[in-house]
Image 1 (cartoon, one colour):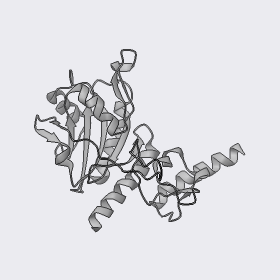
Image 2: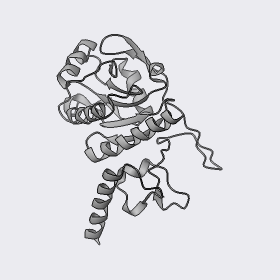
Image 3: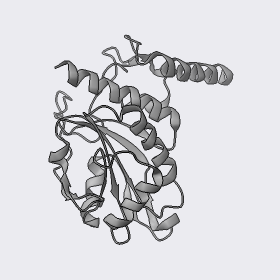
Length: 236
């Protein structure tokens, strides 16, 4: 049975990577990789509907009907790597991905950055797509330092991909809206705990999907979710 389960899971990975969301009836729960759990479930509760996106996170809901009333990410206004004012309002009308990082991170940040670079490469020609990276270490990560960091990554367009510098405590609160974790911890490598999530936000500021920036397969699937939102928005 264990071998069969592994085979089904491996098959599912191949199908998801090759079909670009052509499973109109969804992926059966027992065959789906864990990262599909943030997708809506079919009415009969048997499958994840990968052709649609829900509103993951702790959203307000009616206790009687179970119907959720999703809320967007709270408004924020800080500066970017060029010391230019930049905030959530500047992202209205765009599909974007967000992550939390610090430039001296010795562990997961380089891996997450490599996946963000994949997203930039895939969608960099689409004017409706953007990326934002919030530093969790504003004491050291000045805009100038983040500009140097971005240069070393080889980022092509620093108007499309913004590195955000803001109040440390506000950023630590904001990360909850983006389903992430960011806090100081002297025992953690580099002095910070952070989740490494890459989070997808729609044109109206609602979180719609996410992936671990440490798992390439998850980010590959997230690319399909990005494309879904871009296609849906363009069709309006």
